[in-house]
Length: 212
Image (cartoon, rainbow, N blue to C red; front, side, top):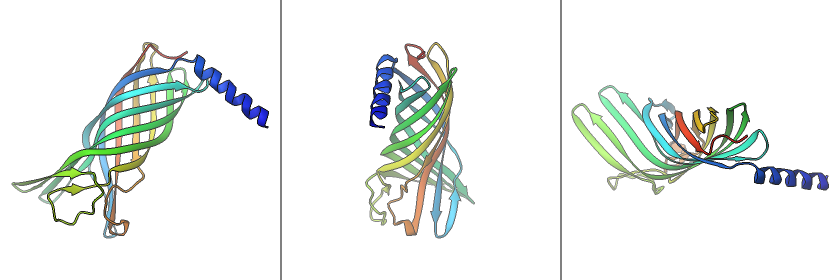
């Protein structure tokens, strides 16, 4: 069993070394939303059209399996309205999706964890003709109303589903769904939770064409 494990490791290492690791760029339009629970009620917010852009790599592990990490800037958040009140939340993150994908004839699909780190943001509330804005701090401080900031946890753990198609030229198209797993609200979970989600569609380019 040990000899077999060593053989598999050597085989994978040899294949990865001989395969072409690709690097590329991508840009995506996303529909960002949030799942919020408070006072025993679950609220699904409306979608906010937003953006994501960054770098991507494709590291073959076998002939059909590859590791496809990304490093992105993404604007998450949500928007919702109740009677004459409208609220929009913009949260900018540095995001690291770690996708493992299956490749076949140009098509690819996979899943992986996502690590996100909050950089900044803004909340805007409109009450009739009155507009109020707050800057966001990702410091994990429990909001107590003693300052002018809105507070969130700085780290977020999520998951990602991705599918797409790569052309021989290196151009690729993809659709993906990112779902939050961790609570970004700094308040105790017993008082409520908030999680980010988004659906995205994008285009990108791998330099050097598609791996054979």
